[in-house]
Image 1 (tube, rainbow, N blue to C red):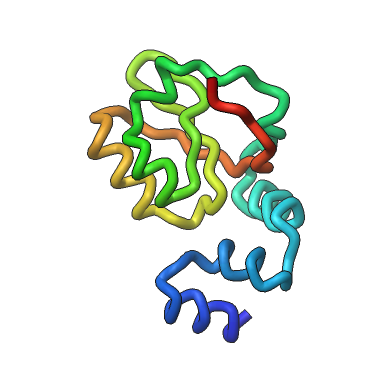
Image 2 (cartoon, rainbow, N blue to C red; image 1 turned 135 degrees about the horizontal axis):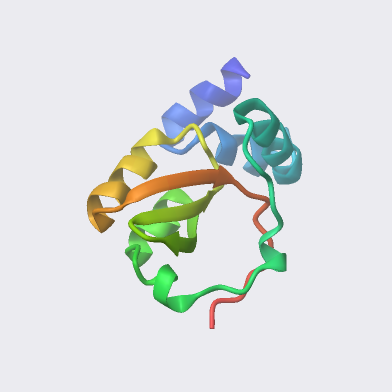
Length: 115
């Protein structure tokens, strides 16, 4: 793990990205572990329909940079599926950009198609 953390720091990427890209751990296994650790739901993004109005609330660059997906909006709260729930910087950036409260849940990233 220390080796993965050091590699991630050198490559300026997240530990999750480093673990998956190096083949040390499967994305699904990390998502399940994160959901259990943080006590939040895990869901398969293939099972939802993407609402483009909600999707457009977050800048495309932030979505790609932080590997997040705006899933739905309830009032002034935006619910995000996140690949790395430990990335508090991502949540703060999106909160600042949207001006909304953010709820972030780990998600098993599927092959969701953006219309």
